[in-house]
Amino acid sequence: MFWTGLSPDEAREALVNKDKSKKDKRMTLKEAVSRFVKPGDNVGIGGFVDIRQPVAICHEMIRQGFKDLTLSFQSAGMAPELLGGAMLVRPDHCSIKRIELAYWAHEAFGLSPTWRYLAERGMIEFEDWSNYNMSARFKAGAMGLPFIPTRSPLGGDIKNTSRTKIIDCPFTGRPIALLPASNPNVGLIHVQAADMYGNCIIRGTDATCAEIAMASAHTIVTCEQLVSHELITSNPKDVMIPFPAVDAVVHVPFGAYPGACRRHYYFNGDAIRGFLALIAPMVKGGSADALKAWYDENIFGVESFEDYIEKFPTKKLLADQLAENYNCERLA
Image 1 (cartoon, one colour):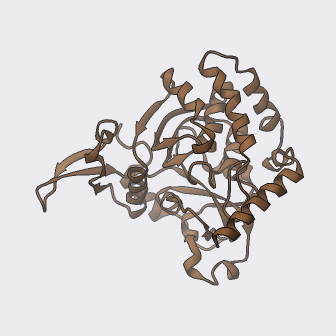
Image 2 (image 1 turned 30 degrees about the vertical axis):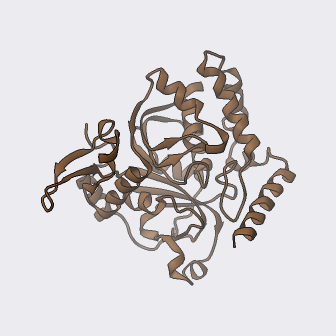
Image 3 (image 1 turned 180 degrees about the vertical axis):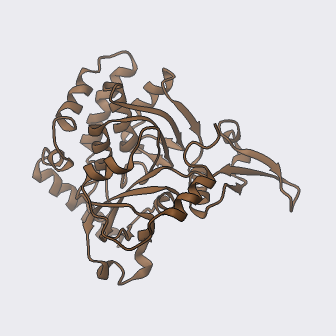
């Protein structure tokens, strides 16, 4: 095993055969996940830590179930936490085989207890990279290259924990590291705005989302706002992800909640810490009952992500929107 998603040749074939016409790609989350997420897939996760995480897509993936996935991401928090937690409470329904990553945690909200649980028990394969290395790998995939040269792994232990290859540069004679391209089967991206064709606008940290979308055979996009094609293309420089890279567009307000989405809402720190607190005791042998009850109530017990959002008090949602608006005004 060397390629854990599409091989470079498979990725090029997928791009050549992909329907690049400008067509209406709006669909429901249920339709998008059912159509594009398959057992054994390499799933690329966009966003950065708990900013613009594809939370709504992960909820639907858990409801439908998934098997033997590889997760590939730069730095992520709630998305892998939700998927990994589902594996802890319903291993018959949800399973992850491998994770290729730089960082899985929540910054100010703490480290990932799910990662610790899975790693200490040898339940999942892990391949350790850095943020730059994973970004470079997605960049190579987006460019249609089998690898990308960089000096980065030469300065630490990444070359010992990954598929990095070291060669003598044919031009300088000095050592250079070659990183294998990452071409996920499907990319999961949450954005601020999109049109029905899949043109996307991202505000704030772009987090290699464009590269993940371009490198993936298929891309599911959820958006805070679904806007007209004329509006989204009125300033072409704003389009971060072009429509040929996108296969499904789903309008899901609060689609990254309880994480943050620039210009729309701030973190719900209480919800993030509360969820992590359900998993943390399990690391030391505690019961999974509380975590299972959370999934039964908030994912398996509802029909849609909108039903989950309705569980939050309106005052709290408005407060998180106001907090983000205040931060945007201060940084404008």
